[in-house]
Amino acid sequence: MSNRILGRIVSIALLAMMTVNAQVCEEKVLYNGAGTPGQMDASSRTFPEAPEWSANWGEMGAMKPPYIRLSGMKNVKADWIGALSLAALPRNVQGGSLRLKVRATQNVKFGVWLASSRGTGNVVFSDIPANVTRSLDIPVEKMLGAGLQRVEKVWIGLFGVPAYQYTTLFVDDVSLSCTVSSVQEASVEAGAAVADSGAGFTPTNTVAKSPVRTSLCLSSTAVPASAAHSDAERKRLAGLTTAAFVLNYNEHRQIRESLESESVTPAESRRLWYRNLFFVDRNRLRDSVVANPKGVFDEAVAFAAANNYSFMPLLVADVEYAYPECQDTLCATTQLVKTRLLQAGIPSSFVRGSKLKLVYDPYFAVTQRNSLPQVEICTAGKCAALSVKGSLELEFESAGVQKISVKLTAGGETQRQNLYVEVK
Image (spheres, rainbow, N blue to C red):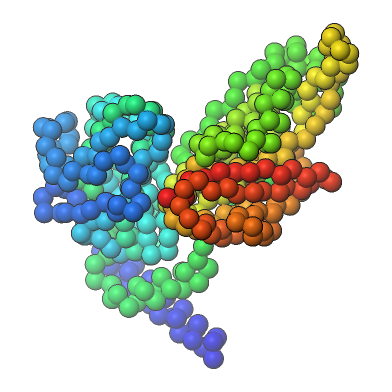
C-alpha cells in the first residue's frame, strides 16, 4: 500500500515538473517601492533598527526613491540579518535569478539568500563599496539548487559590521526573473512533498583529513594565515620534531587556559576555536597540512546565518603540535614536546529560539587523522552522543546565557570543555 501511495505521489510530482517546464518564465517584481509593500520578520531580525519601507534620500545612481532603508549601530562587531516577507511571495520559480539593487554608506559584506518550502538556501556574498549602487543578479539555483522551487522569503544581511559604526543599507528593485504563475498549487505541493521526503541537511562527503574544502555557502575562499616561521626556521625545526606545527610556549599556554576556562562570555566562547586554530596554523612547518581553519570557520558562520541561528555545525579540531618546554629552573635549555589539541566550537554566540540543532559534518573538522573524535554533548544535565554525519537537537530551559558541555575522545585522550551561547 505504501509503495502504491508513494508511486502516485511521484507521478503527480513528475506531472508537476512537466507542467512547470511547459510554462514560460515570467519576471515578478517583489519590491520596487511602488505598491509592493512588505515587512521584516521581527522575531528573526538582528538589524539594529526596523526598516523604512519608502525611504527617499534622493537619487543614488541607478537607485531611485522610494526604497528600503535599514540603519543602525551596535556596541559590538556583529552580523545583521533579516527576512523580507514581501506581499508578492510566495512564488513558484523554475531557475532564473534573484535581482536586486543594494547600496550602503560604509564598505560592507552583503549577503542574500532565499527561504523556500524546502528550507533556507545558501548565502551568496558580495563586497559593496561605500556609496556605490550595485545591481546584483544571482541564479536561484546557486542558492536553492535546481528544479521547481517555492520561494517564500528573501533574507538579507550585513556581515562583520564593526562596533560603533553607524551604517545604512538601501535595497531596491527586488525581483525574480523566472516565476511560473499558472502551475496548479496542488501539483506544486505534491512535487515539494516528494522533494521533502529527504528533508534536512545532507552531510557532505568531505574527508576531514584532506586540506581541500570546496565552497558550501561562500563565493570565495579564505586567505591562509601568514606563516610565523621563515623557510630556514621551518627547516631547522623540522629536524627537531615530527610534529607539523611548532608553537611558542605563550601560545600553548593560552590554548590550554582557554580549554579549561569557566568564565568566558558567549562572544569569547565563539572566537576561541578559530583563535586557537590560528595559533596552530600560522606555526606550520609546511603548507597544506590541514584544512584552512579560517575557511572552515567562515563557512560555518555562513551556514548558521542561513539557518537563522537555530541549526549550525559543530566545529571540531584534532591536531598535534609541539612547543618548547623548559629543562631547568632558569629555562636556559628547552626541548620540543608534542601535545594534542582536541577542541570543539560553534560559529555563533547566540541561538535563535529555545532549540539548537547541531550537525557533526567532516567538512567542519580540522584534523591530520583518518578518524574523527567521538563527541558527547550535555545541556541541563542531559547528555547524548553526536555521531559523525549525525545531528542532535538541544533544548534550553530558559533564555539568557547557557552552557553546553562537550566531551571529545580520540586516541585514548579526552578533552572536556564548556561552550557558552546566549539564547534569544
